Image (cartoon, rainbow, N blue to C red; front, side, top):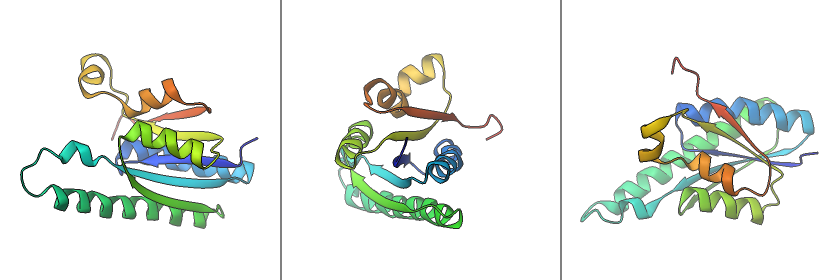
Length: 144
């Protein structure tokens, strides 16, 4: 049913909550896992100085986050590819889905409600609304 599963990450506890689910599904369906980290460089373009340093630090964080997923997947016997890219997160995720024939997306959510969700926005919510494939959302445990 699923042969290519995407798990986008931002390195947060909310996205970490989705990793085990994504690996388990990939193992069950003998699917390849794709770990994706998106650096939104535009968010830091207004900095007068140091924007490059911030973007480089985020790229490094992305490499670490996706490498962690790949290691965890390998320990479970699941093949995993990693990608760190730049762009607007939900658009980059959508583009990745199309470019890599992704069958399912598994991603975390902070579980924000009301004004917090409205003010902060939600990459997960935008992906759910615009995705052309099934999206499994995993809520961050309340104790985190």
